[in-house]
Image (cartoon, rainbow, N blue to C red; front, side, top):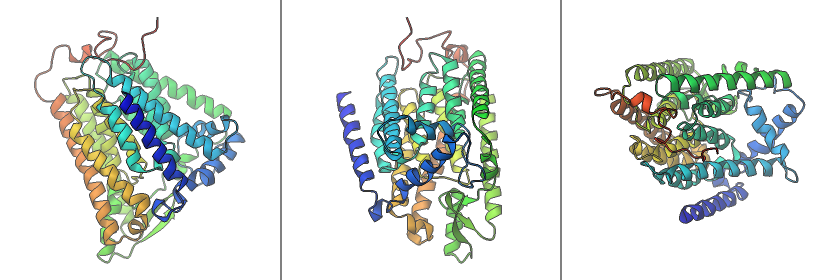
Length: 416
């Protein structure tokens, strides 16, 4: 554990050093970190006035993102940028501690998850420090790791994350059927209703983001964007423009590619629903494995695959590796490889991707190929591990913390 703590300290110091030198052309020329003090800080000013950004095409986040962007203002003596980075580093530390505590408990636990997170996040250079995805990932990680002790806490943390970026809601897809699922999902629903109601009372126009989200096109880094980039090399007369906070393709057939992406997302949702109806065996790692598989499927079928999405996948893969029962070890390797390629595409060689050069196309083909392989392998292994073979008599019930509180160790001690 001392070695893990030392590795975390050294790698985070390196990330901060890279952030301090982010104006170097290979590190994005200042554009990556600029989103915090040019965009987040501007939204902070609007939110401080008691309203969500209205009519802003760049504001595409659920209402829960508002409190996260206001939070840096609570740290005295720091600029908004400094306070934001301090919060992301703190969230990173919380995730590391949670994974470490989960990995040091008995009953088939492993420190591999904490090691993956500690070593994997710096692969993204300094990007995680200047996006609020680490804070959202912390909610998802804690939701999964508290599942064994309190299904209600699991649901509440999942809801907190989902209110900021939606995807943490998928952490509940692997809860065993029956009382466990009802309690977790009910807690998530109550938490969502209470917080949405509170935000609707305290702020104006909290749901304006829905108008902007519906107009998003095909981002150049998505799976559909990779196909359009290759088509561009073959003579397609489309172009790339900055729209809705991302570089997107515009031109003939883009709408059809976007529609296909949506159809694939619907198919992925259907596959997950089919898995839940067919699943018969739950191991201690099944909730973790299902969450990773679900987020992978929704990521690769999305019209948008921003570089910071890799933070989500690293966090969920790390949770899976805290259990020796996981089926996702090979998937975690693919995710780390995809993360490394993603760091090259953004920010190092991003102009190659924007220009759809052969180098840029090849990089995106490799990155998205790795993610697609990870998603398929993840779902296949999840299915084989839970939906194949006879049902164990007590699988669903024994995973419930009320019936067997010692089955999956929690990251927090029992209250006295």
